[in-house]
Amino acid sequence: MIEDKKPSESEIKDFWKWCGFTTKKRYEDLPRGRVVILDYVSPNGKTLDDYPPIDLNNLFQYAIPQLVKTVGKHEAYLLISGCLSKHMLLGDSFEDELFWAVYWALDKVREDSNDR
Image (tube, rainbow, N blue to C red; front, side, top):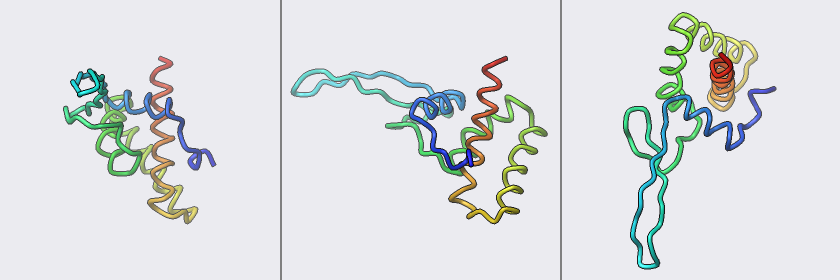
């Protein structure tokens, strides 16, 4: 199943950028010299050390709001409820499989919205 496929680093980067994440360089002086540190900034302004892991909490916190902006509330509802229904009917383990199904559905919307 496509939902079982793990995304590449490039796909993850593109996905979180679509969700509103940005990167910011900062410089830090260390005894061995100055280094560049890349911070990841969430849509709500929180600074992280890296993109967040792909899990249901982060998908609903960051990706679903972008989904609603992209396709509207009704289409977002249909997409997410379709993922839930499919996995409940197939008997897939809820959390282990569901977040990949939701991720790939959201990523498809991201790709389609970039093609417009």
